[in-house]
Image (cartoon, rainbow, N blue to C red; front, top):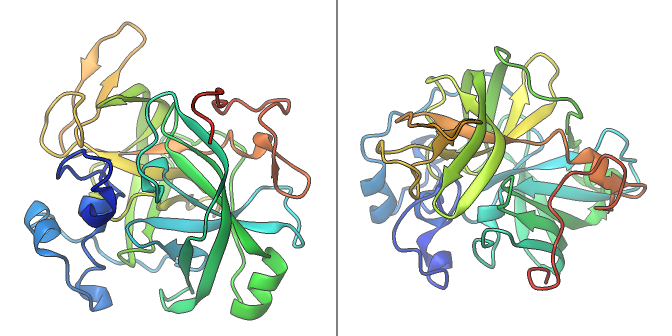
Amino acid sequence: MRKPLLATLTAVALGAVAFVGTTGTAAAAPDRASGANPTAATAAVHADSTPATVTAASFAGTVALSNCSGSLVRMPNSQATDPGLVMTNGHCLETGFPSAGQVITNQSSTRSFTLLNASAGTAGTLKANKVVYATMTDTDVTLYQLTKTYAQIQQSTGIAPLTLSATHPVQGHAIDVVSGYWKRVYSCSVDGFAYRLKEGQWTWKDAVRYTPECQVIGGTSGSPVIDTTTGQVTAINNTTNESGESCTLDNPCEVNEQGAVTIRKGIGYAQETYGIPACFTTGNKLNLSATGCTLPKPTAVSAR
């Protein structure tokens, strides 16, 4: 899990480690293809990274954050008149990493996002008015509510949202990890699933494991993972094992039902998103008590 830009993580006091989509690595400005230069710190961390090959996949609907990637998303039943939603990682939250067990709902936000068109050009700027939901427990996701509806966004930018799939990812399916921050597409397949994925204090359930071709780097955190068969979002990119350590920051480990630990150096992971639509009702309103909603719920202590 690479952190957002280091400048934004000073208050978190997690050192110079870099989660896939947070500060440290995300801090590296978009790569050579976008004309920006990585910071010295991030360049040093990823000096040996092999750039991904840009494919013909569309960037339309993806967004770039100040330190991560994300996407403009809709639920299968969302309407054009509903307020838009932007999805990124929980560890990309502007107020810092949520602690293990913490769930944040309906928190005020004024965050801005650069919306991209199909060729990764700037289509416009989106603005949030609140964090609808954020957590790093069981999954790693933040959902922002925007100040405009999908119809208003499409009218002004020509960009439609990506649709979250309501079905479980499929092993063997081809996928594209589309990074709005780096303006790069990583293409590979779903290699399998980790019963539990542990990294530092956090544990995620039923995580998607990539085949080795998706060598995601910092700044790709929060990128939508597109099933190329359906064109829908099947997961959200969030971490990779960088140096072969076991269950430490930037080095997630897999834990099976019997508790056996497996370490896969260089392999990337994503968190499934198929369970999210069940937690949103009419008007894109969050309802964690809705039938079929399994997202973690806030406690009196953790909610903000």
